[in-house]
Image (cartoon, rainbow, N blue to C red; front, side):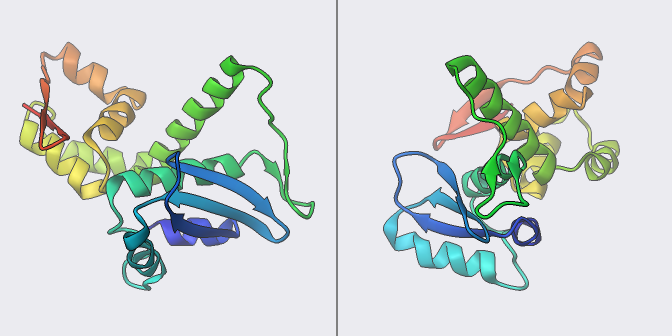
Amino acid sequence: PLRPLLEASRAEVVFRPLLVEGATAPRPDGFRIYCRCEADMATKLKSQLDDDQDMGRGLPRRTRFTLAHELAHTFFFERDTSPPRNQLIPTTDAMLSKLERLCDRAAGTLLMPEDRMAKDICQCDLFSPDDIQGLASHYNVSLVALLYRLKELETLEHAMESGALFLISMKNGEPVVN
């Protein structure tokens, strides 16, 4: 669940319309993470995150990934100051791009921890599109996020070396493994 991770980082989450997926800002006692949503969904999303049973598990996949990505940005702040001070300020587009990729990888790690993934992958047939889709649903992440994580864990390369072939198509605006 995301909420304990956000609380540990002293991050307050604000759901609201934005031009970007998310943003992180330091505040005197921690961070404020902004996450894009439609105005009429903000209260519902906040309630899901604050719910003691859900704690963010049931948030939409894109929202969960954005929150985890923005949480990863907080890892680069010195927390002994008030407000926390950014220790990694990109000075070039290349540095910014690397930082964003690093935060994407950290988000994948937060949402799909290696120890849990290892257990679940053992019970999964990586040759089965249904199993791959099921794994993405189990972690409530997008298919793309799952495939990146499997690649990072070198599971995808192993499966492809063994002859697995994935064809990804779009159905109702969502990627689907065939």
